[in-house]
Image (cartoon, rainbow, N blue to C red; front, top):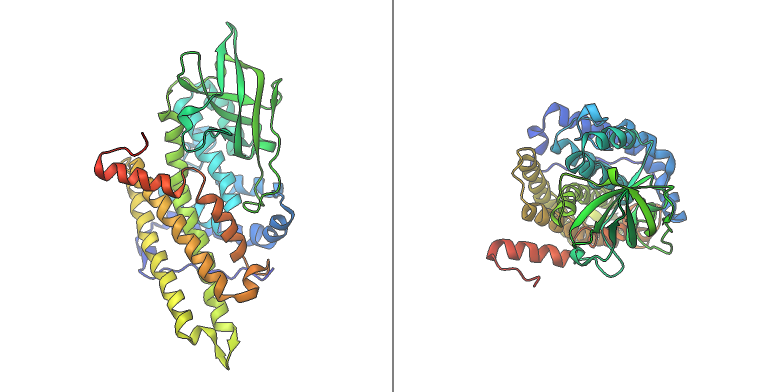
Length: 392
C-alpha cells in the first residue's frame, strides 16, 4: 500500500467559508483515516473482512452519532460537521462510512427522535462509545424500492410482541448488538422495534461472495417467533415516514461521503499523471488526460457546493427529502464516473490494490443502489418538480 498523501481539492476556496470547528473536525477525521484506515483497508477488502479494531477509534473521533446531544453520549456537533466527517471516512472506504451511517443515522437517530427517555438512556451511550453496534432492518428479500410492501410483522401477545419475518442486505448485521427493525402490526401500521442480540429466534446470517463493500460486514436479520418486550417499541413515530426520516439523515451523509471517494480518486489520478512517463513525458501533459482531470475537478467542485448548501439547509431544519435525494443521486453518480475515468488513467495499475481506485469503484456500485437507487431518486426529483407521482 502506497503512503496516504491525500490533499483535498478546493478549487473555489470553500474552506474559507467553513468555521474553525468544522475544519478542526474534518482535519482530525482525516488524520485518523490516514493513520488507522489507509494502511490496512486494502488488506481487509481483499480478505472481505471488517476491521473490528477500528470501532474504538471511530467512537473516539465522534463518528457514532456526532449530532446526538452530549447528554446521550454524542458529540453534539452540527450537520455540517457530520457531513465533513462522512466525507473523510468514505475517502478512506465506503464500507467504513456505511458502518458510521448505520450507527448514527439509522440506529441512534431513530432511538433519539422516535424513542422515549428510557430507550435513549439505555441504548445511545453504548452506541456512541462503540460498546454496542447497531443495524437497521427495512429492506426485505422481496421489497427493496417499495419498503411499504414489507411482510415482516408482529402480534400483540399481551405481555410482549411476537415478531416474524426477515430483512436482507443489512450492514453490521452479523455482529450487531441491537437492530432497529421496521415491521407491521396487526392493523398493517409500520412501527420500529428494538431487537437485541440474544433474543430467542433472532439470527443474523452473513452475506458472502460480495464484490463490493468487501471491508464491510453485510447480512440478514431473521425473526422466528421472537419475543420482543413491549418497552422496545419506538413510541413517538409510526408509519412509513418513520424509517424514511432515518433514510433522509443517512442519504445526507452519503452525499458527503461519495464526494470523499471522488476526491480520493481524483487526487490519486492527478498524482499518477505527474509521475507516469510515456513517450518521454508525464502523461498529465497529454490533452486527453488533462480533459479527464479538468472534468473531474469541475464535477467535484460542483458537488462540494451542492453539499455545502445542503449542510446549511440541514442545520436550519429546512432541507427537504427531495433536496437530500438530489444530492445523494448526483454525488454518487459523479463519484462513479470519476472512479471509472481515474481507473483508466492508471491503466493496468488501476485494477490493483496498490491504489484505492478499483476498491472505490466497486464500493460505489453498492452506494449507487442502497438507500434509494439512482433511478428511484430521479423519480423523487421528478415528482417534486411536477407534483405527479410516477410510483403508482
